[in-house]
Length: 152
Image 1 (cartoon, rainbow, N blue to C red):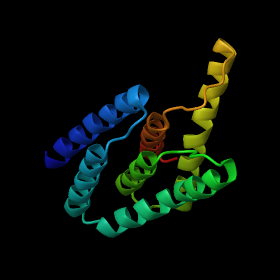
Image 2 (cartoon, helix red, strand yellow):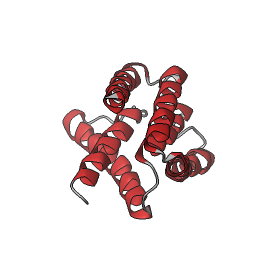
Image 3 (cartoon, one colour):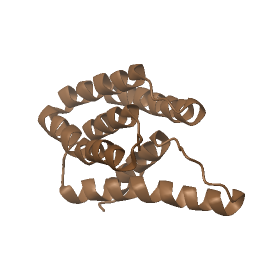
Image 4 (tube, rainbow, N blue to C red):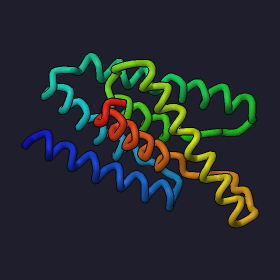
């Protein structure tokens, strides 16, 4: 029952992150901190804190590299720090299980936004400079959980 309540609050926070990021292009520190606290509670309940901290580090590393080197290469921010913090928390919730799962997550989290940008361009013939990346990270998180449930 306690895990159900924790997952319920995680879903509420993720929905709040999606709507706020779409509207304001901001992922609040409060939301990220709450996700981290809930993830730590899950780790204590499931006795897998080590896997969760490792997942947090390994899932976040590619995004930190993209943030730092992509920004240097493009001379502007290619993703926000809130997205990096959200990725850290999603990695914490997903736990480290295999590098395959990490590569799958990274591919999903970049292919879906590219498809979105392409479809938006086809419909409007305009290219937007910024998109909210948080909703795509959350969608990738949900897709990984679904694939994990079916053993993929």
